Length: 109
Length: 114
Image (tube, rainbow over all chains, first blue to last red; front, side, top):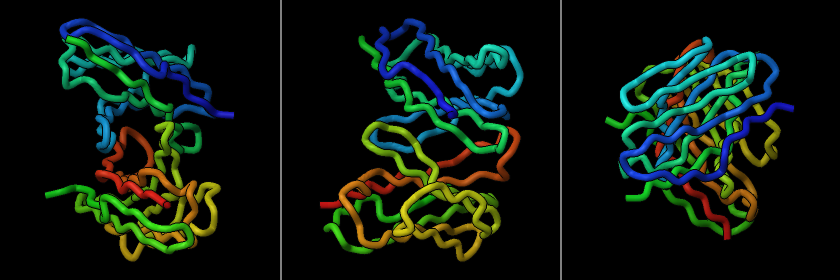
Protein backbone atom coordinates (compact mmCIF):
# COMPACT_ATOMS: atom_id res chain seq x y z
CA UNK A 1 0.00 0.00 0.00
CA UNK A 2 0.94 3.63 -0.21
CA UNK A 3 1.58 5.69 2.88
CA UNK A 4 2.98 8.93 4.13
CA UNK A 5 4.42 9.20 7.64
CA UNK A 6 4.87 12.39 9.62
CA UNK A 7 5.09 13.07 13.36
CA UNK A 8 1.71 13.79 14.86
CA UNK A 9 2.76 16.80 16.89
CA UNK A 10 5.83 18.94 17.53
CA UNK A 11 6.52 21.83 19.87
CA UNK A 12 9.04 24.61 19.30
CA UNK A 13 9.93 27.99 20.72
CA UNK A 14 9.32 31.35 19.07
CA UNK A 15 12.43 32.50 17.20
CA UNK A 16 13.87 28.97 16.96
CA UNK A 17 14.19 26.53 14.04
CA UNK A 18 12.12 23.39 13.56
CA UNK A 19 12.37 20.53 11.07
CA UNK A 20 9.30 18.48 10.18
CA UNK A 21 10.08 15.14 8.57
CA UNK A 22 8.04 13.18 6.06
CA UNK A 23 8.75 9.69 4.76
CA UNK A 24 6.78 8.12 1.97
CA UNK A 25 6.22 4.84 0.18
CA UNK A 26 4.31 5.25 -3.04
CA UNK A 27 3.90 3.52 -6.36
CA UNK A 28 5.89 5.93 -8.47
CA UNK A 29 6.75 9.53 -7.70
CA UNK A 30 5.81 12.74 -9.46
CA UNK A 31 6.52 15.37 -6.87
CA UNK A 32 6.10 16.18 -3.19
CA UNK A 33 4.12 19.07 -1.71
CA UNK A 34 3.97 20.76 1.66
CA UNK A 35 0.80 22.56 2.71
CA UNK A 36 0.05 24.61 5.81
CA UNK A 37 -3.34 24.37 7.49
CA UNK A 38 -4.36 26.66 10.34
CA UNK A 39 -7.06 25.32 12.64
CA UNK A 40 -10.49 25.62 11.07
CA UNK A 41 -9.09 26.85 7.76
CA UNK A 42 -8.23 25.46 4.34
CA UNK A 43 -4.79 24.04 3.49
CA UNK A 44 -2.57 26.50 1.62
CA UNK A 45 0.41 25.65 -0.57
CA UNK A 46 3.92 26.09 0.83
CA UNK A 47 6.39 24.23 -1.40
CA UNK A 48 6.92 21.72 -4.18
CA UNK A 49 9.92 19.41 -4.73
CA UNK A 50 10.37 17.06 -7.64
CA UNK A 51 14.19 16.87 -7.82
CA UNK A 52 16.57 16.03 -4.99
CA UNK A 53 17.84 18.92 -2.97
CA UNK A 54 16.79 21.96 -1.05
CA UNK A 55 14.22 24.55 -2.14
CA UNK A 56 14.34 27.76 -0.14
CA UNK A 57 11.52 30.25 0.09
CA UNK A 58 11.99 32.92 2.73
CA UNK A 59 11.82 31.45 6.23
CA UNK A 60 10.66 28.09 4.86
CA UNK A 61 12.80 25.49 3.07
CA UNK A 62 11.91 22.03 1.83
CA UNK A 63 14.30 19.17 1.13
CA UNK A 64 13.80 16.01 -0.90
CA UNK A 65 15.71 12.74 -1.22
CA UNK A 66 13.92 10.47 -3.69
CA UNK A 67 16.25 7.52 -3.09
CA UNK A 68 15.40 7.60 0.62
CA UNK A 69 11.72 8.44 0.19
CA UNK A 70 12.26 11.35 2.53
CA UNK A 71 11.51 15.03 2.77
CA UNK A 72 11.64 17.68 5.45
CA UNK A 73 10.21 21.13 5.90
CA UNK A 74 12.48 23.55 7.73
CA UNK A 75 10.97 26.60 9.40
CA UNK A 76 13.35 29.31 10.64
CA UNK A 77 12.80 32.28 12.95
CA UNK A 78 9.57 30.79 14.16
CA UNK A 79 6.65 33.13 14.76
CA UNK A 80 3.49 32.49 16.75
CA UNK A 81 1.50 32.58 13.51
CA UNK A 82 3.40 29.49 12.34
CA UNK A 83 1.34 27.42 14.78
CA UNK A 84 -0.57 25.20 12.36
CA UNK A 85 -0.67 21.72 10.88
CA UNK A 86 1.80 20.95 8.11
CA UNK A 87 0.67 18.41 5.53
CA UNK A 88 3.02 16.40 3.36
CA UNK A 89 1.54 15.10 0.10
CA UNK A 90 3.11 12.96 -2.64
CA UNK A 91 1.91 12.64 -6.21
CA UNK A 92 2.25 9.00 -7.17
CA UNK A 93 2.91 7.36 -10.52
CA UNK A 94 -0.73 7.77 -11.51
CA UNK A 95 -0.63 11.47 -10.63
CA UNK A 96 -2.85 10.95 -7.62
CA UNK A 97 -2.06 12.94 -4.48
CA UNK A 98 -1.45 10.85 -1.37
CA UNK A 99 -1.72 12.88 1.84
CA UNK A 100 -0.10 12.47 5.22
CA UNK A 101 -2.16 13.10 8.36
CA UNK A 102 -0.24 16.27 9.05
CA UNK A 103 2.05 17.46 11.83
CA UNK A 104 0.56 19.83 14.36
CA UNK A 105 3.19 22.42 15.23
CA UNK A 106 2.79 24.27 18.52
CA UNK A 107 4.87 27.41 19.00
CA UNK A 108 5.54 28.57 22.56
CA UNK A 109 6.67 32.07 23.54
CA UNK B 1 -12.64 37.95 -4.76
CA UNK B 2 -12.72 34.45 -3.33
CA UNK B 3 -10.87 32.03 -5.61
CA UNK B 4 -12.67 28.83 -4.52
CA UNK B 5 -15.92 29.36 -2.71
CA UNK B 6 -18.10 26.69 -1.21
CA UNK B 7 -21.44 26.91 0.52
CA UNK B 8 -22.65 26.37 3.10
CA UNK B 9 -19.78 26.76 5.55
CA UNK B 10 -21.68 24.94 8.28
CA UNK B 11 -24.37 22.32 7.93
CA UNK B 12 -26.14 20.60 10.82
CA UNK B 13 -28.73 18.01 9.90
CA UNK B 14 -30.46 14.84 11.02
CA UNK B 15 -29.60 11.30 9.97
CA UNK B 16 -31.45 10.21 6.88
CA UNK B 17 -31.69 13.68 5.34
CA UNK B 18 -30.33 14.67 1.92
CA UNK B 19 -28.04 17.67 1.57
CA UNK B 20 -25.92 19.42 -1.04
CA UNK B 21 -22.70 21.42 -0.91
CA UNK B 22 -21.88 23.77 -3.76
CA UNK B 23 -18.47 24.83 -5.03
CA UNK B 24 -17.39 27.42 -7.54
CA UNK B 25 -13.93 28.55 -8.66
CA UNK B 26 -13.03 31.70 -10.57
CA UNK B 27 -9.39 30.79 -11.26
CA UNK B 28 -10.02 29.37 -14.72
CA UNK B 29 -8.77 25.97 -13.56
CA UNK B 30 -9.79 22.87 -15.47
CA UNK B 31 -9.74 20.36 -12.60
CA UNK B 32 -11.85 20.32 -9.44
CA UNK B 33 -11.89 18.01 -6.44
CA UNK B 34 -13.87 17.03 -3.39
CA UNK B 35 -11.92 16.01 -0.29
CA UNK B 36 -13.15 14.74 3.06
CA UNK B 37 -11.19 15.59 6.21
CA UNK B 38 -12.23 13.57 9.22
CA UNK B 39 -11.50 14.10 12.90
CA UNK B 40 -8.05 12.52 12.47
CA UNK B 41 -7.23 15.21 9.93
CA UNK B 42 -6.56 12.88 7.00
CA UNK B 43 -7.46 14.49 3.70
CA UNK B 44 -9.13 11.84 1.57
CA UNK B 45 -9.87 12.39 -2.09
CA UNK B 46 -13.43 11.57 -3.01
CA UNK B 47 -13.89 12.79 -6.57
CA UNK B 48 -12.08 14.74 -9.23
CA UNK B 49 -13.36 16.26 -12.44
CA UNK B 50 -11.32 17.52 -15.35
CA UNK B 51 -13.24 19.70 -17.78
CA UNK B 52 -16.53 18.30 -16.45
CA UNK B 53 -15.37 14.69 -16.89
CA UNK B 54 -15.06 12.44 -13.84
CA UNK B 55 -11.41 11.31 -13.57
CA UNK B 56 -11.14 10.15 -9.95
CA UNK B 57 -13.90 8.29 -8.20
CA UNK B 58 -12.58 6.80 -4.99
CA UNK B 59 -14.39 4.16 -3.02
CA UNK B 60 -17.09 6.23 -1.45
CA UNK B 61 -20.70 5.17 -0.80
CA UNK B 62 -22.97 5.76 -3.76
CA UNK B 63 -24.99 8.01 -1.48
CA UNK B 64 -22.43 10.62 -2.53
CA UNK B 65 -22.96 12.00 -6.02
CA UNK B 66 -20.90 14.76 -7.58
CA UNK B 67 -22.18 16.97 -10.38
CA UNK B 68 -20.17 19.31 -12.55
CA UNK B 69 -22.43 21.50 -14.72
CA UNK B 70 -19.36 23.32 -16.09
CA UNK B 71 -15.66 23.39 -15.34
CA UNK B 72 -16.07 26.22 -12.82
CA UNK B 73 -18.58 24.36 -10.65
CA UNK B 74 -18.53 21.07 -8.78
CA UNK B 75 -21.36 20.25 -6.41
CA UNK B 76 -21.69 17.36 -3.98
CA UNK B 77 -25.02 15.80 -3.11
CA UNK B 78 -25.32 13.38 -0.21
CA UNK B 79 -28.36 11.14 0.25
CA UNK B 80 -29.52 9.42 3.43
CA UNK B 81 -26.93 11.05 5.67
CA UNK B 82 -25.25 8.89 8.32
CA UNK B 83 -23.40 9.79 11.52
CA UNK B 84 -20.09 8.79 9.92
CA UNK B 85 -20.55 11.42 7.24
CA UNK B 86 -19.78 14.12 9.82
CA UNK B 87 -16.56 15.77 8.63
CA UNK B 88 -15.21 18.84 6.90
CA UNK B 89 -15.59 18.68 3.13
CA UNK B 90 -13.13 20.69 1.08
CA UNK B 91 -13.51 21.65 -2.52
CA UNK B 92 -10.31 22.38 -4.43
CA UNK B 93 -9.20 23.24 -7.94
CA UNK B 94 -6.01 23.06 -9.99
CA UNK B 95 -4.81 23.60 -13.52
CA UNK B 96 -4.18 20.10 -14.81
CA UNK B 97 -3.04 17.18 -12.69
CA UNK B 98 0.70 17.03 -13.40
CA UNK B 99 3.76 19.13 -12.81
CA UNK B 100 3.85 21.70 -10.06
CA UNK B 101 0.12 22.28 -10.25
CA UNK B 102 -1.00 23.57 -6.90
CA UNK B 103 -4.35 22.85 -5.34
CA UNK B 104 -6.32 25.87 -4.21
CA UNK B 105 -8.81 24.91 -1.53
CA UNK B 106 -12.11 26.39 -0.53
CA UNK B 107 -12.69 27.31 3.12
CA UNK B 108 -14.42 24.00 3.84
CA UNK B 109 -17.95 22.93 4.73
CA UNK B 110 -18.34 21.44 8.19
CA UNK B 111 -21.09 18.84 8.13
CA UNK B 112 -22.52 17.58 11.41
CA UNK B 113 -25.00 14.73 11.29
CA UNK B 114 -27.07 14.25 14.45
